[in-house]
Length: 419
Image (spheres, rainbow, N blue to C red):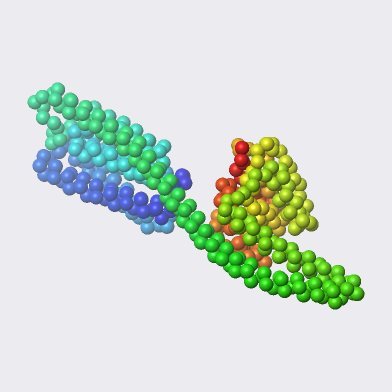
């Protein structure tokens, strides 16, 4: 069986519409069958035609029953339904005048439906089947005087039949080519619109986070300044107590670090707003991030491998530091004892491969990463991956996470180089 080429609901709707079209066609064919019998009684053909119409109607009823069951509709099944239509119509046309039957042009309908819904491989099979059917019906069929062209001018009749065949062939090829192209373009547009909606949702979440962060940073500045003053006064007051003085100095250094981080954030945001990013050597850029991460997580065990590093530089957006460190921290949380970092250049891209041996991620979770605010950690805020993906994408890069063959996750980060 094939795989669904469209979402399940859309595929079921398409098969339902095809069944409705087939029902209308069958109603018209049954009416025409009885009208022809009334005007010009048939001999042997009527038996065959009635049997074919009964089989065709029975297949249509079975399709209605199949649609009542909650089963996925695959591309191959939809293709098979169209092939059944062509086969039944071919038998009908064979016993009712062949290419002289005015309903012969209906063979364009399966081509149009296939071109708009199926892949190009299936569409070309449908098109070739209809062309072969039409061509064979020019020579092999049961005569039906009711549909015969006038016999007064044999040459004119031949050119009429040839012209009909040429028109059908040209129409079938043009429909197949251009409708498939248009369907492909519409599919790409839907994907683009879906991506734009996801980006808009993520940007709205980022704006909300940025506003909260700006407010928090503004509120933290005053208490940090107060804490710095109080810690200095306490240090002067208890300078005779070495143990307490040591703890106060540690607290003072931590508070100073927080204050400096806030100032650096303000400076980095200002540079980002003005687009003032400096060029940096690749190894310097990578080593500075790894060293900074190692200071934050001194107990982590990892191996670092540099290979195929070019002489190009990279635009150092400070937001990338936080993004990459966030990815490294996620790997460290998953497997603190065994992390592998492969850093190399390929096709004007700087590539980081972060390989951990943790529990890994499932497919459903992987679809949410970097798109929504959520966290799988008890103490997580749920915004780390969202901010990381946004910073990397704004820098022209990309990040993908896939399951490792043995265990854990492979995080692949790609950043553009400046040549």
